[in-house]
Image (cartoon, rainbow, N blue to C red; front, side, top):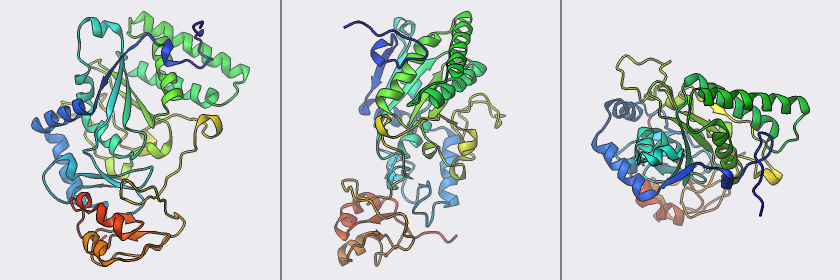
Length: 363
C-alpha cells in the first residue's frame, strides 16, 4: 500500500511519524512514584498539606475536588473527583506513558523516565481527574523555548478549530499553510529536534486516533516550559483547587510568571484548550456524568435532581442497613462526597472508600 502524503491540511497517521515511541508501563510508573515519595519535594508536600487543612472539598458531589482526610502522604490516601464519572478515586491508579521523541535521544541512550519523573505530580493529578481515557498518557518531547512553544500551541489551536471535523475555507487553508511554513522554518533555523513537521504529524495523529483528554508537549530546554493541551474545557483543573499549585521550579524566588510553570493553576483562563468539534464520526460529545462510586458499576444518576437520599450512618453501616436505592442514588451521610446505586455497591466500595470517608467539615 502506498504511503500517504503528508501536508498541513491532510489528516496524518501515526504510521507516518518518524518519532520513536517509548512506553513506560504501570510498573515503571509505580517505581517512579515510589522514588518521588522517597525524595519528597517540600513544595509539593506543603501544597498537599494545605489541601488537607483547607478542607475545601467538603459537601461537594459535583465539583472537582481533592481530598486527603486520613493516613500518611501516599497516593492511595489522596482522592480526586473525576470529571467524567464524578467518582472519588485514589491517586494510586497508575497509567502507561507513551513518550514520542527524536532518534537523537535514542542514539545518546537517554532514558525517557526522567521526562515522566519531571512532571510526575502533574501527571498524577491529571490521571486522578479522569476515571476513563487516562490509562494512556501521551507526551511529545521537544527542545522548544517558550516563545516557540507558545507559537506552536497557537498553531494547533488554529488547526483544530478549523480542520478537526470541519471543512476549511480557502482563506483559513492559506493561513494554516503559512503558519506551518513559518514554524517549520523557525525550528529548522534554531536546529530544534524533532522538526516541526514531525511534531505536527505525531500531535494531530494522536488527537485523531487516540482521542486523549490531553496531550503534553514536553520541552527539555532548561529555560522553557512544557505545555499541556486539553481537548475539552471540562478536562482543565479547577482554579479553586490548584490556584497555588507548585510551579516545579527549583528557584526559591519563583513567581507566577516563572517559565517552568506547566500546570494551569488559573483554570480555564490559563489553560491551552483545543477547539475540537465532537460528535458523529469525531467521537462522542463530552459530558459530565454522575455515576455510582463502585468502580465496577455502570449506572448513571439523573443529574437534574438536586435532592439526594442519604445513607443512615456512613458508608459501612449504611451498606449493612439495606437502604433501598432510588433513581438518584444513595449519598454517604458521613462524608457526603460519594453516591451509590445500592447498599450492596456501597458495601463493596467500603474497603477503598474508608481511606477517605470522614465527617464533612462545615462550610
